[in-house]
Amino acid sequence: MQRLLVAILAAVDAAIAAAVGLAVLLAPLTLLWTLAFGATADWGGLWPVTGTLWQFGHGVPMDLTIVDAVVSAVGIAPEAAHFTLSLTPLAFLVFTLLFAARSGTRAARSGAWLLGTVAGTVAFTAISTGVALTARSSIAEVPLWLAILLPCSVFFVGVLCGAVSHAWREGDGGAIDRIHDRVDGWGPWSVVPGEIVRGTAVVTVALTGIAALAVAVSVAMRGGEVVALFEAAHVDATGAAVLTLGHLAYLPTMLVWAIAWVAGPGFAVGSGTAVSPAGTELGVVPGLPVFGLVPENSSMWMLIVVLLPVAAGAFAGWMIRSRLVWRDAADAAAPRAVITAGIALLTAGIIAVAAVLASGSIGPGRMAEMGPSVGWTALAIGVEVLIGAAIMLLAPRHRDELAEERTDRWTSEMGVSPVTDAVDGSTSAPR
Image 1 (cartoon, one colour):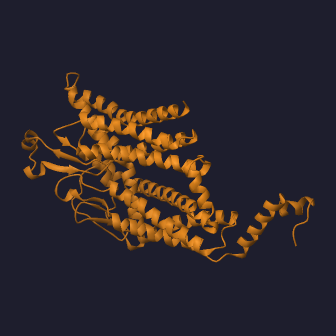
Image 2 (cartoon, rainbow, N blue to C red):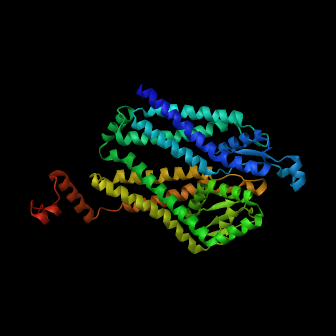
Image 3 (cartoon, rainbow, N blue to C red):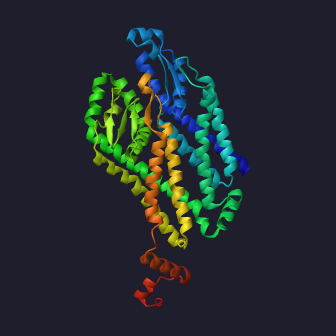
C-alpha cells in the first residue's frame, strides 16, 4: 500500500508541475486575449497558443509562418514570413526541473525512489503527450516527437537527480546503498564521486550568483537604454505587460549569456556579431528592451572578469579541501587531482547544456544566430574552474592544515578538545 501511495503522490506531483506551468501561461494569456479581442473573441485559439508556448519553454523549437494578410499589411519580405524560433525562455524549464527534483527527493524519503521516478515521469509524459496532440497550430508548428520528448526529459532529469542525491546521502536500503558500500571500499578514492558532485554544485551556484550580479550591474548602468527602447516600441499597457512578462521568462537565459560573457567568449546577437569583455562588434540589434543591456563597447581591462570563474573554482576547491582534511582523506594527491579534473569537466558539461538551451534563433536572416558559443564557453569555464580548483586542492599541505588535522583527530578519538582542556584544566593537551 505504501508503494502504491508513493506512485500516486509522484504522479500528482508531475500533474501539479505541468498544471502550474500551463496555468502561469494560460492566466495572463486569457486576460490579454480578452483585452485585445474582447469577450466575443475566438477562444479556440487560446489553448493552442498556451500549449505551444509551454512546449517552447521546454526547448521545443517553433516554425512560425506569418499569414499573407499580415505580410502584405506590414510590408514584410516574403522570404522573412517563415522562420524558426528556438531561443528558449528557460524560466519554464528551470521551474519544471526544480519541481521535479523536489518530487524525486520526496519519493526517496519515502523509500521508493525508483518507483516514484518512474511514476512521475510516466504521468508527465502522458500530460506532455496530451498537450502535444491537442495544442496544434498552423501558425506556430512544433515537431510532435520533440513536443513530447523534451518536456518529459526535463522532468525525468530533475526527478532522477533529486531522488538519487537524497538516496546517496541518506540511503535507500537497495541498489544505491550497495553502490555506496562498494565505493566506500575504494579506500582513499571513496571520497572522489561525492566530492566531484558537491564541488560542481558549489561552482554552479557561484557562477549563477556571479551572472546575476553582472545582470544587476548592467541594469543599473544601462537602465536608461532599456527604458528608451520601451518608449520607442510605442506599445500600450497590454503590450508593455507582454514585454515585461517575456523579459521575466528569459531571465535565466540572460544569466547564461552573462556567464558566457564573464568567462570570456561572450555571446552573439545576430550573425557576425560578438559581445565579450575583449570587445563588442554589433550590427543592427532588434529593438527589444532587453537588448539595451548589451554593452556598446568593451575594454581589454574588462578581461579581468575571467578571474571570477577562477575564484568560483577556488572557492569550491577550498570547501572540498576542508572536507577532505576533516575526513582524514587529504594525504593522497591522486584522488585530489581526479576531484579537481572531475569538477572542471562536470561543470563544463553543465555549462555546455545550458549554452545549447540559451542559444538559437529569434527571426529570419542574421537573427538566426543568437546566444553563446557552446564549445568555446564550455572550454573557457572548464579551464578557469580547473585553475581555481587546482590552486586550492593541489597545493602542498601547510603545517597549519596538518595541525588542524591532528587537533580534529585528537577530538575524535578522545571526545574532548585539547583547546578546551587547556582552558578548564580537565585534561592535558598532547605534547
